[in-house]
Length: 345
Image (cartoon, rainbow, N blue to C red; front, side, top):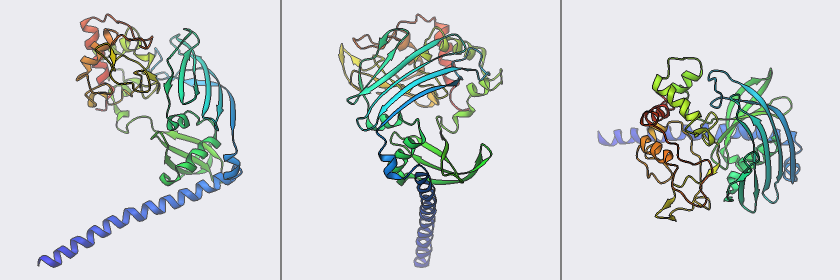
């Protein structure tokens, strides 16, 4: 009896492993055909690879979420930007200008040159110390035109998947996705008639994080956050200065900052991107991602709040946004409580 059972089990294993592989191959083949049609619509691979320099001027609106002082309103404010990209030498410059509905203005940008990225603030007249930028992150910062997106897809074609068909702007589209150099998954809508890229999307939060207490509060349920958490939200946006780095729907500016966490015993323990600077992490699911900081040196959210309340570890390259907050015991408690509301229930 043992042998027949063993044979049946083996056949089941072979069958179950073969089916997903077949589906994956079919999905890739369909997606690659869609990509090839789109590349042809833009003049072909040779035409795309010949792109050397890109210069853009953008005028439009910025849709606000966490920065608004009136949560629940998808406020829109004027946004302008100037972008210059030198693809062949991996150089770029971006300057953007706008304001939040609450009254805070910004006019900042960055320059990428010789493998380093330097951010600057034209209002405060400050700049960050140059930090190393990886080729993957450089490519992520150039996704401004369909042609540049397609160039990235061609490099990462092995990760293509076919998702199906959908209407966008009352026109039929085929939908594919792929994994970018920096690990993001981009979904592309390709017009079935023209082959042109109409839009792309990227998922910026964990699929379960959209059901957090904060999201319910923001979407109109005024009872979703407790009084303590609402007080913490006010601190997050105000006295705590958290939105200096943790902005947008994913609560991160995607930039490099020196928060002092890499400085120990008056010396740099970890250079990070160059001078003790590390990328701002998302705060989504933060209640489930302990321990905290890049090195796991802070065990609890209360420890994190205490660290930032004292202004971090002082060092020559400390981000200018870091300063002692002088929060009261209740304010610290409220802030930690709000942070826990950013995780899915």
